[in-house]
Image (cartoon, rainbow, N blue to C red; front, side, top):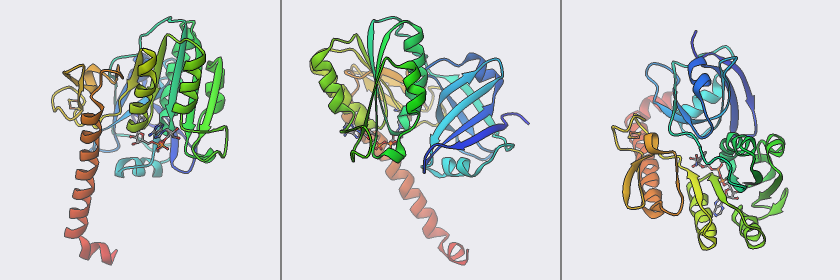
Length: 282
Ligand code: NAD
Ligand code: FES
């Protein structure tokens, strides 16, 4: 079977790691790119960032959080099961090259996506300072893996259960006040990326964000992943996912992301209402 799950492991109560046999995407994958995955013929198409790729073995690693209906179904799959499609790699690869000193910032499940960027940054010969944050110790992932690719690793938790008690923007500001960096790269929840952009802006530090826009076709045709960057319309699936954080229209982006969630909730509620009799029987 194509796209067979080779390994599945739980990283915390809501985040899973899957290794899947997908030779074509694994051969071409670069840091910063993503795939579109479909569980079965009728399944929705969901974008997932590539966390690691082994071109020789044809294996992709994806890390995802159980959130919507598809990721919940994925969490219930096991080694030996197969996906209907793993399509990619999509999006533009990270290509900042050798800058000197770079600071990487990641929050929550976004930490999975900073790992290939850290490998890339280090391999290009940069000094890499990495800041990772989670709400609580239990939700923190990939600390050891990131240590390998970072010259300095700062860990934060919102509740102080591990590392520094802060949001990621706290140590970022302190670091920028003390040292000069050539680039910041950030992945995480939308609101975090907006605030990282606002933290680096006064320092004039070039900052890239990897946007996790809602997507449908992922070919630049449907417009779902539209974002305004520097006054121009861009499509995250083909022009991104990486954009200059200081040029993103954050208010518009956050509104569009929220609208999608609200619409999904409304359609689920409508579905529940229409099917309540059979749901009660179940
Ligand atoms: P979370 O809400 O637990 O936040 C993780 C960390 O981000 C926090 O510990 C904190 O340090 C930082 N943070 C959060 N809000 C902040 C703020 N206002 N200011 C400064 N820092 C802040 O993260 P989560 O639950 O893992 O996030 C899930 C969300 O992230 C989902 O909505 C998902 O779509 C999104 N996501 C985005 C990407 C991407 O590519 N950008 C990747 C994966 C997930
Ligand atoms: Fe349709 Fe990007 S997902 S244009």
